[in-house]
Amino acid sequence: MTDKWHLLFLIVLRFHGYSYTRRFDKVELDTIVETVSDLPDPVLDPAVQEAFDVAYDNIYAFHDAQKPVEKIAENMEVSSAIFNCKIIPVCISSVGLYYPGGTAVLPSTALMLSVPAQIAGCKTIVLATPPAQDGSICKEVLYCAKKAGVTHILKAGGAQVRMQYAHHVHSCIRDTLSYQPMSGGSLGSVFLGEWTPESVGDYASGTNHFLPTYGYARMYSGVSLDSFLKYITVQSLTEEGLRKLGPYVATMAEIEGLDAHKRAVTLRLKDIEARQLSNLR
Image (cartoon, rainbow, N blue to C red; front, side, top):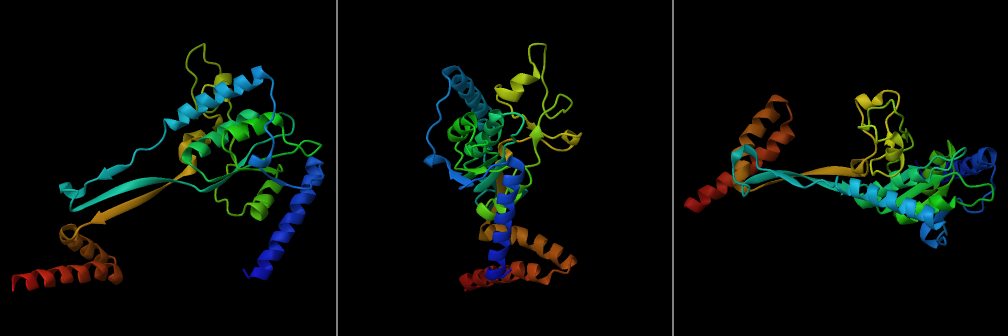
């Protein structure tokens, strides 16, 4: 897409985003994206603040315990000095989160989505939430957002959230718009014993209440720290490692007819052999 058409595309998105906010949220906004650090700290009733602080601590502890450990596999039962493979967890740098609003104020959802992203180390965390009639942000949601490291708040709800992400935060590469609060019929989370009501998981036990619905818990998990991580594999071979593994790779590449893959190995093996012969002279 050319710069001209890209600009036109963003202008159209912006127009429709604002028009949908006027139409469905019934709010006229001067600024649709707020930088959280620029907003004043909200003042909550002490009992309310304590409840959210306890929930935050428990949610943080549960998701912090999910941090993956870097694992190294020493293949072919040879010394790691020859070759090894490992997998490295890396945070997704920019994420967009959707907090539903409308008929109910759900600041607990802001914690459930933002805390794992905070722990993962996401640099940009954009939380979308419908604004109040005066254009303000629910003070409990803002308190949770500030505590959980949200960097920006997008004042929008519904379908226009995706449009506004495209215009204002098009660098975001993951969102959780499809997650819904959990229901008792989902086996994405289990509550054991008569003293464990579903409410504790909804709010403050520490587990995440964003779970798959409509039976998708059979094959998908709910939101966790992994939702905000990607994994990069790394392999490292020494000269001796390639000498041992290379012939197998060359054979497989030849069977598949991928000559470039084969030559990437065989040329290096020939170089090793040539240098070994030179050293013997």
